[in-house]
Amino acid sequence: RKMASGSSSSPKAPPPDGDKGNHWLDLPDLPSSAAGLNSTNTPRRPPPPPPPQAAFAFEIMAATTNDNNTHSPPVAESEASPGYDKMSMEIGGEQDAYDYVVNDNGYDGSEDGHLTAKERVLYSRLLKGCCVCITVLFIVAVLLGVQGIEDKEWTELEAEDELQVPILETNDGYRIYSCPTIRSKAENDVGVALDHYKRGAQDLADYFYLRRQQAHIPFQDIRYDGYPVSFTSMKETLRPWKVKYFCPYLKSGDSIYESASGSGMNLLLTLQILKLECNIHDLTIAGNDYIEQNVKNSIYLHSVIEPSMSRSSFFCVADSASSSTEHNHNPFAISGHVPEKSFHLVYTGYIEPIIDPIGITGADDNLPLLDQTLYIVDMLCDFDNIHTKMESWWAAQRIATEYQQAQEEWFAKWVHELIRIAKPGAPILIENVPPRLCSHFTDYTSGVAKDFWTRGVETYGWDVDVDSIQTVDMESPFQFRYSVFMKRTLYSEDDIILL
Image 1 (spheres, rainbow, N blue to C red):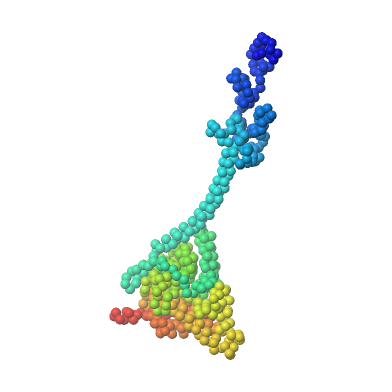
Image 2 (cartoon, rainbow, N blue to C red):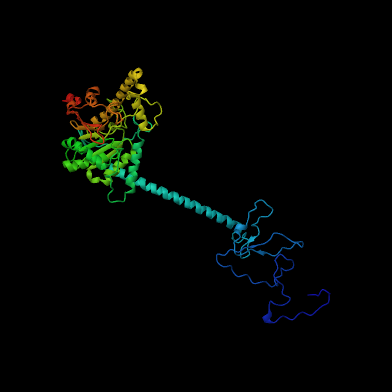
């Protein structure tokens, strides 16, 4: 080079080999954009060592220029933090804070397939969002899986029970039946009238489900179907009745049908009494209930918990009452799916009365059950009440008579279905019947008087031997109630015409 003064000078001798790169003429590395320093002969600094694994150190180059239009040297970000938390995306401004972020190798990510820091932040946030979504979906899947397992268990039980469809010997040969596919609202399903049965059915289902892994599920001390006593107490109460009025009319291999079978507990204690007291076993049992959960409980009880107590069992969701006292046009009723003259014994553990068959309490059907009953009793039965004083006594009596007639019509619809599916000469039994309205002041549930059953043969044309009708008073805790025994006639009017 020429000196600044213009004089010439001889070239400097080359440095010794050990001093290469340390000569006073060697210049420090400058940014490649500096003028006049693009010569290939310019010495270069060796590349920096690779960063440690999983470390994120970024160099942020300032976007400002000085008065000489030269770039300021890069400023190193602290290696203690990746710098993500300090970065802010200023979309739409003159400068984007990510425009000058470079990776450890000096690349800005816009070329050679490398990601920019901006893209890394976005992908990181996207990854976090995906993790949250996957976690939520996993929790939902687990919950649905648990519910699906429970539903599958019930479905398998129902399917297993459907394989045990009873083959019934009727007058026209062997027949089978299936559950109704059409459902309708029952006449006594008004307001909250059946809510306590639904709650009890669900409680029993929970009891069974929580103990499903046990080898033997204890149920002797539980209460069922709205009764105030346990299974064991109810069994002892009904034992004399079952032995006297069930055993003489059954033999091993016969069939029994219970209308409104509830949870199936009454049928189970009946089977136990028949086997232990009368040596009657291998019975085909069937039943129906209006509440679906009760039917599921019955299937589980007789198919899983106590399958050896019966030869086969079959339960359906169906209405126990017909659409009229003479003919049934309701496909959801018993006669809509059960063949006529099919069972050797037909009974019901309880006929659920209609609380207000003529609408005395008005349109408010959601009053608590006891409140509705007490209101009716106070209006029609309490002779000290203002409604039943001398000036309104006749009106109260007329309403009470109308109320009782409506209740008897309801009972007749129920009995019509029992008689229809009983074989000729088979016993028909109605247990736990409450007495008529205003005849007692302990059990406020309205039922029918004892003479209703003999009157019903003529009034409703029941195919029943009137001389076979018997009423038996119940023991505690139902000492104010009674049960009824009667037999279907051996030959009906149709059979006599054929003969």
